[in-house]
Image (cartoon, rainbow, N blue to C red; front, side, top):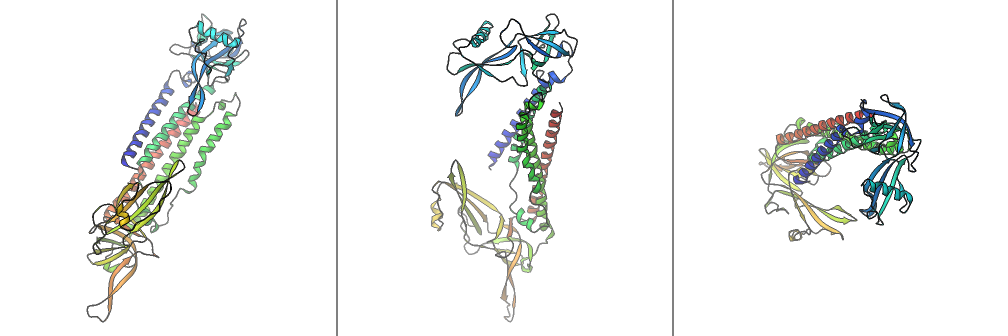
Length: 527
């Protein structure tokens, strides 16, 4: 991932996180929020009332209705109904069974209400029915729309959601003692009407806040993932030579089962009939729990990566440097690359280097996506000559892990340079492009080498009567891969230590986000 793409992901993720958190805070602090209206003690004229609806005797309409003019719109490849106009209607009284303060036995309900947490199920009103004409007449009298012209299209309809006579409800609002009327409190556009227990409205508002908190956590996770660096190429090879340690999350991966279980729980909750407050659903909590799970796995993975980076340091620090002339067994060398003959001309660039290894990958179209396949790994020579102050040696790099200069190029077709060198690769029928990655080692470049001596050449002494030790060869078949780092041991140690510190920092960030989100969810669930 390029730096520009990483920066863009970080910026978008952080901005989305901040925006969602601000919206969640706004919803929590909004005086119109159900958490505020139902969760705080009622002080007159603000009241809580539990009672039974009674339809007005002179009305043939239901006691309280939410009436909506819907218009059919295109939603992607399908169609959907969107609200074009809406109004509320009330011709009802409330037989008071309980009130948060002394109240008359009957109260009139104004039409400025809102069904909470969900309105009753919508029913379609027949276009030419008397009910449709009645709703249009009421709306037009109050200048609320629902005109004949606006409802004339084939994609227009009227739907109603109503509560009728003898329905037990819980009402939150302000009472006008002079009128005996329940109406919205000052500064609010509506009062609340719950067909059941008020806790359902609070739970629904808490669930909405949890939805935005979970979305913010996921957005931040995207930003942080963009900051995760690719592990140093030598970590895996050095781990093999270090003490035994954990290399994967193991049983912790079972946490991935939590999100689908949370989703299933939401489905089951929706199947629980009222008066259970869980019937309002917990989709926001399910998303937040999913975010909590992913942050847990992220923090654990960073802790694991820290442990692996430190384990990779162990053989580097525990193995003393050896001279080529005395190399035997497993050794750590500080050498410089040397040209063999006229050197190697790389595929990418026009310079001459001591060693080159190129990897050609083809991408091709597979359905709606792009797939990758490695076509060829090419080296002009499998060996690299090296030397230090004590003598010369050879690195056999057929099995190696290289942490050296990396060159990259992308092309639709391979340039003539490849064919001139006899490099011909297969071409998929749905070919898209080729990616070429080439690792090069320059002549005279300092190298840190960790590997096993596989062979020691013997040469005749100057006096000719016996053989003496010659140059060693590291690597090859039958031994562990040779590890080659462009630089000195001090630089490799600093790189691995920096990688461990960065992984530890991200693990701390993960732990902090997990704690904050867990505390927020626990608080919202307790409301």
